[in-house]
Amino acid sequence: MNAPLRLVVAGASGRMGRMLVEAIAAADDLVLAGALDRADSPALGEDAGAAIGRPQGVAITADLDAALAGADVLIDFTRPEGTRAHLAACARHGVKAVIGTTGFSAAQKAEIAAHAERCATVLAPNMSVGVNVVLKLLDVAARALDTGYDIEVIEAHHRHKVDAPSGTALQMGEVLAAALGRRLADCAVYAREGHTGERDPSTIGFSTIRGGDIVGDHTVLFAGTGERIEISHRSGSRAGYAQGSLRAARFLATVSSGLYGMDDVLNLR
Image (cartoon, rainbow, N blue to C red; front, side, top):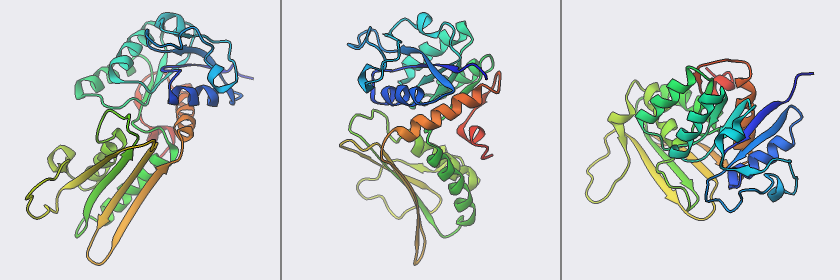
């Protein structure tokens, strides 16, 4: 029997971090090897499994090198600044990375690609298996509905989300634009107010909702004459993101270098 894959969770005391710790604890082929959090986190020193009632014998720490020593894969759902620092430490230790952080600039994505040349990395704005299947469906739909249909992307998240539109909504936009032979940067409309004039049929519109504890809802509307087609995904909890992340970590165990997406993990290319 192969040794369990040794995983480190960044942001271990947060909502997503706790979900990841719980999912790892329930998996027979994985083990929690480290738990990271910010230097000002009140959870430092606590057992990473205490919040879920399943102690793991791993204390939450802000010491990157200590957490990553001997690890195989880091799973990171933090913020761009933190993720960049974590990747620098991963490079020192030869640790692979699953990155679900969103809000990266083009230059920061280039940094991640450079890291992936040394240590295999999965980068995806949404780790949910269902969302990534939806992305495949959107590609098919956009190619078939390329004429006579206006496309709008509507997304909703909790009040604490700091970037908009969501990384998933933007990835949906990228998939739609590519299927239509366009560049999203040239056809995206992110805001409408006042006298906007008639809708340009070549555009892809985005609408953003923030409120309450919404985990994540995404709908793409294809509005034609006499009919509307909607392709939606709604997350009821973060469990789907956690399970997708674990699938990504297992995938990384099979490769040594390269930058991958969830379409590679799920064989959807």
